[in-house]
Length: 389
Image (spheres, rainbow, N blue to C red):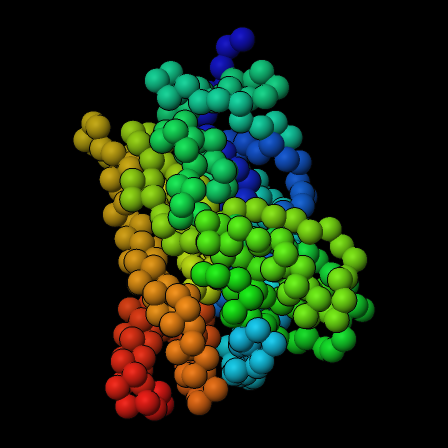
Protein backbone atom coordinates (compact mmCIF):
# COMPACT_ATOMS: atom_id res chain seq x y z
CA UNK A 1 0.00 0.00 0.00
CA UNK A 2 1.44 3.37 -0.99
CA UNK A 3 1.62 6.02 1.68
CA UNK A 4 -0.49 9.16 1.57
CA UNK A 5 1.79 12.18 2.02
CA UNK A 6 1.30 15.36 4.06
CA UNK A 7 3.80 18.08 4.85
CA UNK A 8 2.89 17.74 8.54
CA UNK A 9 1.12 14.93 10.36
CA UNK A 10 -0.22 15.65 13.84
CA UNK A 11 -1.02 12.69 16.08
CA UNK A 12 -3.78 13.59 18.53
CA UNK A 13 -6.81 15.86 18.15
CA UNK A 14 -6.78 17.38 21.64
CA UNK A 15 -5.91 21.02 22.47
CA UNK A 16 -2.21 20.66 21.54
CA UNK A 17 -2.91 18.92 18.25
CA UNK A 18 -5.68 21.32 17.26
CA UNK A 19 -3.54 24.36 18.11
CA UNK A 20 -0.66 23.03 16.01
CA UNK A 21 -2.92 22.15 13.09
CA UNK A 22 -4.73 25.50 13.17
CA UNK A 23 -1.41 27.39 13.27
CA UNK A 24 -0.04 25.49 10.29
CA UNK A 25 -3.23 25.49 8.23
CA UNK A 26 -3.55 29.26 8.70
CA UNK A 27 -0.27 29.58 6.76
CA UNK A 28 -1.41 27.28 4.00
CA UNK A 29 0.54 24.21 5.13
CA UNK A 30 -0.76 20.76 4.18
CA UNK A 31 -1.46 19.31 7.64
CA UNK A 32 -3.40 16.21 8.70
CA UNK A 33 -4.58 15.43 12.25
CA UNK A 34 -4.92 11.75 13.13
CA UNK A 35 -6.83 10.56 16.20
CA UNK A 36 -7.92 7.09 17.26
CA UNK A 37 -11.26 8.45 18.51
CA UNK A 38 -14.18 9.88 16.59
CA UNK A 39 -15.14 13.33 17.87
CA UNK A 40 -16.89 14.31 20.02
CA UNK A 41 -15.36 11.77 22.40
CA UNK A 42 -15.21 11.35 26.15
CA UNK A 43 -12.05 12.59 27.86
CA UNK A 44 -11.24 12.35 31.55
CA UNK A 45 -10.19 15.79 32.82
CA UNK A 46 -11.10 18.30 35.51
CA UNK A 47 -11.65 20.80 32.70
CA UNK A 48 -10.12 23.90 34.30
CA UNK A 49 -9.64 26.84 31.91
CA UNK A 50 -7.89 29.88 33.36
CA UNK A 51 -7.63 33.39 31.97
CA UNK A 52 -4.23 32.26 30.68
CA UNK A 53 -6.15 29.65 28.65
CA UNK A 54 -8.51 32.29 27.34
CA UNK A 55 -5.66 34.59 26.27
CA UNK A 56 -3.94 31.74 24.46
CA UNK A 57 -7.18 30.65 22.83
CA UNK A 58 -7.59 34.15 21.38
CA UNK A 59 -3.95 34.25 20.26
CA UNK A 60 -4.16 30.87 18.50
CA UNK A 61 -7.75 30.66 17.29
CA UNK A 62 -8.24 34.32 16.42
CA UNK A 63 -11.75 35.73 16.52
CA UNK A 64 -13.46 32.39 17.29
CA UNK A 65 -16.02 32.77 20.07
CA UNK A 66 -14.87 31.85 23.58
CA UNK A 67 -18.32 31.08 24.99
CA UNK A 68 -18.75 27.68 23.26
CA UNK A 69 -15.51 26.52 24.91
CA UNK A 70 -16.84 26.29 28.48
CA UNK A 71 -19.97 25.51 30.45
CA UNK A 72 -19.44 27.10 33.88
CA UNK A 73 -17.78 30.28 35.14
CA UNK A 74 -16.61 30.93 38.71
CA UNK A 75 -14.92 33.92 40.36
CA UNK A 76 -13.10 32.58 43.37
CA UNK A 77 -11.74 29.50 45.09
CA UNK A 78 -11.89 27.59 48.40
CA UNK A 79 -8.82 25.86 49.86
CA UNK A 80 -9.15 23.04 52.41
CA UNK A 81 -6.96 20.82 54.49
CA UNK A 82 -8.88 17.56 54.68
CA UNK A 83 -12.35 18.75 55.78
CA UNK A 84 -11.32 22.14 57.20
CA UNK A 85 -11.66 25.26 55.04
CA UNK A 86 -8.41 27.24 55.36
CA UNK A 87 -9.06 30.09 52.96
CA UNK A 88 -11.64 31.29 50.47
CA UNK A 89 -11.81 34.14 47.99
CA UNK A 90 -14.78 35.40 46.02
CA UNK A 91 -15.26 38.13 43.39
CA UNK A 92 -11.88 37.53 41.80
CA UNK A 93 -10.84 36.94 38.18
CA UNK A 94 -12.74 34.37 36.18
CA UNK A 95 -12.09 30.64 36.17
CA UNK A 96 -13.86 28.58 33.51
CA UNK A 97 -14.78 24.90 33.54
CA UNK A 98 -15.39 22.79 30.49
CA UNK A 99 -16.32 19.29 29.45
CA UNK A 100 -13.46 17.98 27.33
CA UNK A 101 -15.89 16.19 25.03
CA UNK A 102 -17.23 19.61 24.13
CA UNK A 103 -13.99 21.61 24.28
CA UNK A 104 -11.81 19.30 22.20
CA UNK A 105 -14.50 18.87 19.56
CA UNK A 106 -14.82 22.65 19.29
CA UNK A 107 -11.06 23.24 18.88
CA UNK A 108 -10.67 20.44 16.36
CA UNK A 109 -13.55 21.92 14.40
CA UNK A 110 -11.76 25.28 14.33
CA UNK A 111 -8.62 23.61 12.97
CA UNK A 112 -10.71 21.86 10.33
CA UNK A 113 -12.39 25.14 9.37
CA UNK A 114 -8.95 26.67 8.85
CA UNK A 115 -8.13 23.97 6.31
CA UNK A 116 -6.55 21.16 8.33
CA UNK A 117 -7.45 17.63 7.24
CA UNK A 118 -8.77 15.44 10.08
CA UNK A 119 -8.63 11.64 10.02
CA UNK A 120 -10.67 10.26 12.93
CA UNK A 121 -11.35 6.81 14.32
CA UNK A 122 -8.00 5.36 13.27
CA UNK A 123 -5.20 5.09 15.79
CA UNK A 124 -1.46 5.14 15.34
CA UNK A 125 0.00 1.62 15.22
CA UNK A 126 3.67 2.51 14.73
CA UNK A 127 6.05 5.14 13.40
CA UNK A 128 8.88 4.47 10.97
CA UNK A 129 11.19 7.32 11.91
CA UNK A 130 13.76 6.54 9.23
CA UNK A 131 11.16 6.32 6.49
CA UNK A 132 9.02 9.16 7.91
CA UNK A 133 5.84 7.10 7.73
CA UNK A 134 3.02 6.64 10.26
CA UNK A 135 1.36 3.22 10.12
CA UNK A 136 -2.26 3.37 11.27
CA UNK A 137 -4.34 0.62 12.84
CA UNK A 138 -6.50 0.42 9.71
CA UNK A 139 -3.42 -0.38 7.62
CA UNK A 140 -3.37 3.08 6.11
CA UNK A 141 0.02 4.77 5.84
CA UNK A 142 0.72 8.49 6.25
CA UNK A 143 4.08 9.85 5.11
CA UNK A 144 5.27 13.17 6.50
CA UNK A 145 8.01 15.76 6.33
CA UNK A 146 7.39 16.79 9.96
CA UNK A 147 5.55 14.90 12.70
CA UNK A 148 3.98 16.43 15.82
CA UNK A 149 3.14 14.00 18.62
CA UNK A 150 0.25 15.47 20.60
CA UNK A 151 -1.03 12.05 21.62
CA UNK A 152 -1.17 12.44 25.39
CA UNK A 153 0.71 11.18 28.39
CA UNK A 154 0.93 7.63 26.97
CA UNK A 155 2.23 8.98 23.66
CA UNK A 156 3.23 6.35 21.13
CA UNK A 157 5.34 8.97 19.38
CA UNK A 158 7.30 9.52 22.62
CA UNK A 159 7.63 5.77 23.14
CA UNK A 160 9.00 5.41 19.62
CA UNK A 161 11.56 8.17 20.25
CA UNK A 162 12.64 7.30 23.79
CA UNK A 163 11.43 3.78 24.59
CA UNK A 164 8.97 5.03 27.21
CA UNK A 165 6.37 7.78 27.33
CA UNK A 166 7.31 8.87 30.88
CA UNK A 167 9.42 8.00 33.92
CA UNK A 168 7.41 5.81 36.29
CA UNK A 169 9.07 7.24 39.39
CA UNK A 170 8.00 10.78 38.49
CA UNK A 171 4.55 10.38 36.97
CA UNK A 172 1.36 11.26 38.83
CA UNK A 173 -1.92 9.39 38.77
CA UNK A 174 -5.43 10.80 39.10
CA UNK A 175 -8.83 9.30 39.81
CA UNK A 176 -11.95 11.26 38.90
CA UNK A 177 -15.71 10.98 38.83
CA UNK A 178 -18.42 13.20 37.38
CA UNK A 179 -21.36 13.33 39.77
CA UNK A 180 -24.74 14.99 39.40
CA UNK A 181 -25.13 18.13 41.49
CA UNK A 182 -28.24 16.57 43.00
CA UNK A 183 -26.04 14.32 45.15
CA UNK A 184 -24.22 17.24 46.80
CA UNK A 185 -25.26 18.01 50.39
CA UNK A 186 -24.45 21.70 49.75
CA UNK A 187 -24.09 24.16 46.89
CA UNK A 188 -20.71 24.33 45.14
CA UNK A 189 -20.20 27.52 43.13
CA UNK A 190 -16.41 27.85 43.29
CA UNK A 191 -13.64 25.32 42.70
CA UNK A 192 -12.44 23.61 45.88
CA UNK A 193 -8.92 22.30 46.43
CA UNK A 194 -8.19 19.82 49.24
CA UNK A 195 -4.73 19.24 50.68
CA UNK A 196 -4.00 16.33 53.00
CA UNK A 197 -6.14 13.76 51.15
CA UNK A 198 -3.26 12.19 49.16
CA UNK A 199 0.52 12.43 49.38
CA UNK A 200 2.34 14.82 47.07
CA UNK A 201 -0.90 15.93 45.49
CA UNK A 202 -4.39 17.15 46.30
CA UNK A 203 -8.08 16.61 45.75
CA UNK A 204 -10.53 18.82 43.89
CA UNK A 205 -14.21 19.55 43.39
CA UNK A 206 -14.81 21.48 40.17
CA UNK A 207 -18.26 22.91 39.42
CA UNK A 208 -19.85 22.29 36.04
CA UNK A 209 -23.29 23.15 34.72
CA UNK A 210 -25.17 20.03 35.87
CA UNK A 211 -22.40 18.07 37.56
CA UNK A 212 -19.27 18.42 39.65
CA UNK A 213 -15.99 16.75 38.74
CA UNK A 214 -14.41 15.26 41.85
CA UNK A 215 -10.91 13.88 41.84
CA UNK A 216 -7.63 13.22 43.57
CA UNK A 217 -4.18 13.18 42.06
CA UNK A 218 -0.63 12.77 43.26
CA UNK A 219 2.71 11.13 42.57
CA UNK A 220 1.83 7.51 41.87
CA UNK A 221 4.86 6.02 43.61
CA UNK A 222 3.91 7.77 46.87
CA UNK A 223 0.24 6.72 46.77
CA UNK A 224 -0.08 2.93 46.54
CA UNK A 225 -3.61 3.14 48.01
CA UNK A 226 -4.97 5.88 45.75
CA UNK A 227 -8.34 4.17 45.22
CA UNK A 228 -9.02 3.90 48.95
CA UNK A 229 -8.00 7.55 49.39
CA UNK A 230 -10.38 8.59 46.61
CA UNK A 231 -13.26 6.60 48.08
CA UNK A 232 -12.68 8.26 51.46
CA UNK A 233 -12.60 11.67 49.76
CA UNK A 234 -15.84 11.01 47.88
CA UNK A 235 -17.52 9.99 51.13
CA UNK A 236 -16.22 13.17 52.77
CA UNK A 237 -17.61 15.39 50.00
CA UNK A 238 -20.99 13.68 49.51
CA UNK A 239 -21.62 12.09 52.91
CA UNK A 240 -21.78 8.68 51.23
CA UNK A 241 -20.37 7.00 48.13
CA UNK A 242 -22.11 8.65 45.16
CA UNK A 243 -23.18 6.74 42.06
CA UNK A 244 -20.88 7.07 39.09
CA UNK A 245 -17.98 5.51 37.26
CA UNK A 246 -14.52 6.02 38.71
CA UNK A 247 -11.89 6.65 36.03
CA UNK A 248 -8.13 6.92 36.29
CA UNK A 249 -5.26 8.23 34.19
CA UNK A 250 -1.63 9.25 34.46
CA UNK A 251 -0.70 12.93 34.57
CA UNK A 252 2.68 14.63 34.13
CA UNK A 253 3.72 16.40 37.34
CA UNK A 254 6.15 19.06 36.18
CA UNK A 255 8.90 16.76 34.93
CA UNK A 256 8.78 17.74 31.28
CA UNK A 257 10.99 16.31 28.55
CA UNK A 258 14.16 18.36 28.24
CA UNK A 259 14.47 17.24 24.64
CA UNK A 260 10.87 17.19 23.35
CA UNK A 261 11.52 15.41 20.07
CA UNK A 262 14.14 14.60 17.47
CA UNK A 263 14.92 15.60 13.91
CA UNK A 264 11.61 16.39 12.24
CA UNK A 265 9.56 15.11 15.19
CA UNK A 266 8.15 17.28 18.00
CA UNK A 267 6.18 16.44 21.15
CA UNK A 268 3.50 18.79 22.50
CA UNK A 269 1.14 18.94 25.46
CA UNK A 270 1.01 15.95 27.82
CA UNK A 271 3.21 13.97 25.41
CA UNK A 272 6.00 16.42 26.28
CA UNK A 273 5.11 16.37 30.01
CA UNK A 274 3.85 19.96 30.00
CA UNK A 275 1.52 19.99 33.00
CA UNK A 276 2.09 22.39 35.88
CA UNK A 277 1.96 20.57 39.26
CA UNK A 278 0.87 23.43 41.55
CA UNK A 279 -2.33 24.62 39.85
CA UNK A 280 -2.72 21.51 37.70
CA UNK A 281 -2.86 23.69 34.60
CA UNK A 282 -2.42 21.57 31.50
CA UNK A 283 -4.85 22.75 28.83
CA UNK A 284 -3.23 26.18 28.51
CA UNK A 285 0.25 24.71 28.13
CA UNK A 286 -1.09 22.13 25.68
CA UNK A 287 -2.50 24.84 23.42
CA UNK A 288 0.62 26.97 23.79
CA UNK A 289 3.02 24.11 23.05
CA UNK A 290 0.97 23.07 20.02
CA UNK A 291 1.14 26.65 18.77
CA UNK A 292 4.91 26.76 19.34
CA UNK A 293 5.33 23.42 17.55
CA UNK A 294 3.45 24.83 14.59
CA UNK A 295 5.62 27.95 14.55
CA UNK A 296 8.78 25.85 14.76
CA UNK A 297 7.76 23.70 11.81
CA UNK A 298 6.98 26.85 9.81
CA UNK A 299 10.45 28.23 10.60
CA UNK A 300 12.12 25.00 9.51
CA UNK A 301 10.07 24.77 6.32
CA UNK A 302 10.65 28.36 5.28
CA UNK A 303 14.28 28.83 6.22
CA UNK A 304 16.58 29.43 3.24
CA UNK A 305 19.27 27.46 5.08
CA UNK A 306 19.19 23.70 4.62
CA UNK A 307 19.10 21.63 7.77
CA UNK A 308 17.42 24.22 10.01
CA UNK A 309 16.03 22.19 12.92
CA UNK A 310 12.38 22.42 13.90
CA UNK A 311 13.39 20.97 17.28
CA UNK A 312 15.86 23.80 17.97
CA UNK A 313 13.23 26.38 17.03
CA UNK A 314 10.64 24.61 19.20
CA UNK A 315 12.93 24.52 22.22
CA UNK A 316 13.65 28.21 21.78
CA UNK A 317 9.95 29.11 21.69
CA UNK A 318 9.12 26.74 24.55
CA UNK A 319 11.43 28.38 27.08
CA UNK A 320 8.40 30.51 28.00
CA UNK A 321 6.70 27.30 29.16
CA UNK A 322 9.69 25.51 30.63
CA UNK A 323 10.74 28.50 32.74
CA UNK A 324 7.30 28.47 34.35
CA UNK A 325 7.47 24.72 34.94
CA UNK A 326 10.95 25.02 36.47
CA UNK A 327 9.59 27.48 39.04
CA UNK A 328 6.60 25.20 39.69
CA UNK A 329 8.85 22.16 40.19
CA UNK A 330 10.78 24.01 42.88
CA UNK A 331 7.55 25.16 44.50
CA UNK A 332 6.48 21.54 44.92
CA UNK A 333 8.94 21.30 47.82
CA UNK A 334 7.27 24.25 49.57
CA UNK A 335 3.83 22.65 49.31
CA UNK A 336 3.76 18.86 49.17
CA UNK A 337 6.24 17.34 51.68
CA UNK A 338 4.62 16.76 55.09
CA UNK A 339 6.53 19.55 56.93
CA UNK A 340 5.67 22.00 54.14
CA UNK A 341 2.04 20.96 54.20
CA UNK A 342 1.90 21.66 57.94
CA UNK A 343 3.40 25.09 57.29
CA UNK A 344 0.82 25.75 54.56
CA UNK A 345 -1.98 24.88 56.98
CA UNK A 346 -0.67 27.60 59.29
CA UNK A 347 -0.13 30.18 56.56
CA UNK A 348 -3.41 30.04 54.65
CA UNK A 349 -5.93 30.96 57.39
CA UNK A 350 -3.99 34.06 58.45
CA UNK A 351 -4.57 36.03 55.27
CA UNK A 352 -6.34 35.76 51.95
CA UNK A 353 -3.34 37.35 50.25
CA UNK A 354 -1.66 34.03 49.45
CA UNK A 355 -4.87 32.67 47.95
CA UNK A 356 -5.33 35.83 45.87
CA UNK A 357 -1.74 35.54 44.62
CA UNK A 358 -2.57 31.99 43.55
CA UNK A 359 -5.55 33.26 41.57
CA UNK A 360 -3.44 36.07 40.09
CA UNK A 361 -1.02 33.42 38.85
CA UNK A 362 -3.83 31.45 37.22
CA UNK A 363 -5.11 34.65 35.61
CA UNK A 364 -1.64 35.29 34.17
CA UNK A 365 -1.47 38.58 36.06
CA UNK A 366 1.77 37.61 37.80
CA UNK A 367 4.50 35.29 36.58
CA UNK A 368 5.68 32.05 38.14
CA UNK A 369 8.95 33.66 39.19
CA UNK A 370 7.15 36.41 41.13
CA UNK A 371 4.80 33.87 42.69
CA UNK A 372 7.68 31.59 43.72
CA UNK A 373 9.59 34.49 45.28
CA UNK A 374 6.49 35.61 47.18
CA UNK A 375 5.82 32.14 48.59
CA UNK A 376 9.47 31.53 49.47
CA UNK A 377 9.90 34.90 51.18
CA UNK A 378 6.72 34.53 53.24
CA UNK A 379 7.62 31.00 54.26
CA UNK A 380 11.12 32.00 55.44
CA UNK A 381 9.84 35.05 57.33
CA UNK A 382 7.15 32.95 58.92
CA UNK A 383 9.58 30.30 60.08
CA UNK A 384 11.84 32.96 61.61
CA UNK A 385 9.18 35.11 63.26
CA UNK A 386 6.33 32.68 63.77
CA UNK A 387 4.07 35.11 61.86
CA UNK A 388 3.39 34.50 58.20
CA UNK A 389 1.64 37.71 57.07
